[in-house]
Image (tube, rainbow over all chains, first blue to last red; front, side):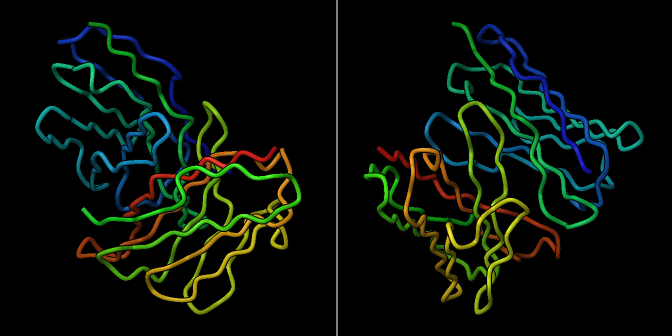
Amino acid sequence: GEDVEQSLFLSVREGDSSVINCTYTDSSSTYLYWYKQEPGAGLQLLTYIFSNMDMKQDQRLTVLLNKKDKHLSLRIADTQTGDSAIYFCAVASSNTGKLIFGQGTTLQVKP
Amino acid sequence: GAVVSQHPSRVICKSGTSVKIECRSLDFQATTMFWYRQFPKQSLMLMATSNEGSKATYEQGVEKDKFLINHASLTLSTLTVTSAHPEDSSFYICSARDPGPWGANEKLFFGSGTQLSVL
């Protein structure tokens, strides 16, 4: 079946850049997504990239997509303590069209 | 972006009671809503797809008689955990698909989640 993998934990210092990586096995998704989850809260759509693009920049966020390698990454520039959260990537299952989420990457930002 | 309201945000109940969780799309009509379950430090597990005016579609392994879903209108879906037991304790999150201008593929907006604790 479809699988989405993320590293579980990333720690950076405030002001540094953070790069969160995601790999997937299959996708028919027109869009690929990054969601942010703060403790005890639901998911907030952070950004997304259209599948025919290889890069999208949105203020401090840069999404890179390598369709050949099935690799998606999220770069956060000038990481702030408020960026501390769990970040999920999500792609659509080619079988069902439903979103499949990675396990989530916990980003810890140290002052 | 679109807003999805979910409540209650937290509920504590005794074993054997039923709990209803509501999910509302506030500024768009959602023909499809999704219910997820999330265990601590784990990803979201899709439980069921809720379709307005028809029966919900449950994922494999999810008991439909245990988790009753009603999608009576284009803006409201409810999940009722019947005869709750401690193992049902979890974080439940709903999402709604906003068809929007971005085409046929999914763009989901999530509720803030409900932490259910069954004593």
